[in-house]
Length: 591
Image (cartoon, rainbow, N blue to C red; front, side):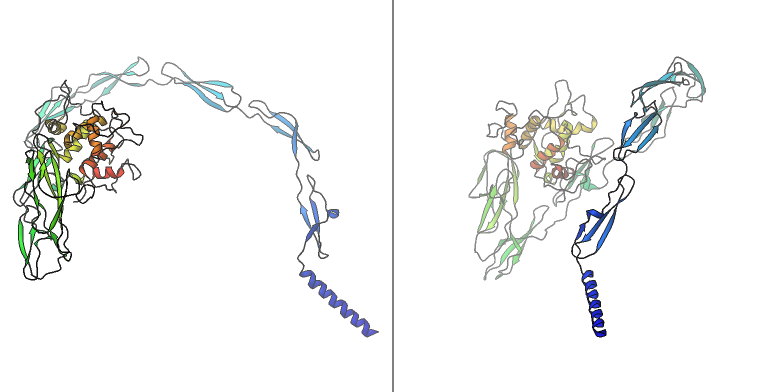
């Protein structure tokens, strides 16, 4: 019997251990036991009871007291001037409380002010932003303000008394003052080229004095000759000439440039192809004057990759020609094809390239660009010739100005000292001719005209373009250089400067430029030449004044200036529609 009891105890122990093991491994599914829960009140906590639906375990959680929900049952809120007692009652348990609040006081804001003077008080009016009540406060009178000068007995050399009047009334006072000292105005003095004396004259009395003779100041021009404008380019055959405008006297200063040494460069221009039985030839050409030096290529040489076809030569040199002149082109190397393009267009473009088949008759001013390509044996690989450019000007058809050789480098509208370009400002007549002065040379003599409103700084450039018959003054002898220039007016100036054909009616049309408009031929000519384009809506706006940014765009296209970037401009950034054009306009590119 004892063994049976012992065994039974062992079984119970094992069952208990098994029950604990099962319990510790239970994934509880807690269920709310509503019979054991207590609800919270406004001031007392409640509790929630849970039991596990899988085992016998239970647990409980504390629920926070709800807190009173007070609502106003009597009384009013305090105002600017009245206290208040508000009775509130809890909507849940009925608990009551009272809230005593003092009057809030006015929130005044100034609405009107009358300043005090030396003879009359002032006032300030305030208004409460809450209850709209107003109040007015007085401002005490102020002292006299003796700042209005009336007269003085003091002179340049003697002390005296000055009379001052109050700025608010007629009261006056006397103030002892020291002698005034001379107020000297300076005249005379040396100029850029001549010595001179300064004269100092007092504006209040007859005192005057003269300085000792001062040396001539010398012209205020850039120290670096690279900043001067090239008038005549130095070559191996002749001296050159540079020009700069003196900032002080506004006159042009010229500087001679010594002749250049021959610069044959590294390009080898082949003029005869070697064979197995005969030698070939090549020349080196001076880049400054065109002088040639001939060299021999050994016979049997087959690798000609280092050589370039000799430049195409013209039977008539660039310059003035008679209408109907025939120009022939040739190359020193045999078995080549010659290609050309008219009007300054590039023959490298298939859109403009033509094959040369004989003499070209010059009927109007033009620029012919030409180059040669080897057309002989396919086994010979020689680089095409450089593009040569020849300019022919027909006397009775050509304009009196021409694009400078280095116009394509840009830099014709330099920035002011503040680094601003003012792209949206309207361009003036002065600004247009100043920009064109950088780009265009003139064969015409400067006009001997007098305008009453042209200053010394603009005298020479005005004379240049009036002499070239591109601009005129007005009947009252004014030039009006600070006036803006219309888009239609600029078209006329540029079409005449470029010598475009304006005697016909082209197909270029804009909705706001009738064929009867006086500027229609000029607008059409520039549009046909590819220098202008209308707005996306099909208009041209001929009567609008052109902006400085628009001027930079059209001059860039005319001078074929390569667009650039990276210039720091104070009032533009890279997102501006004309930024790249303006960069090219303000900074001269490297050759």
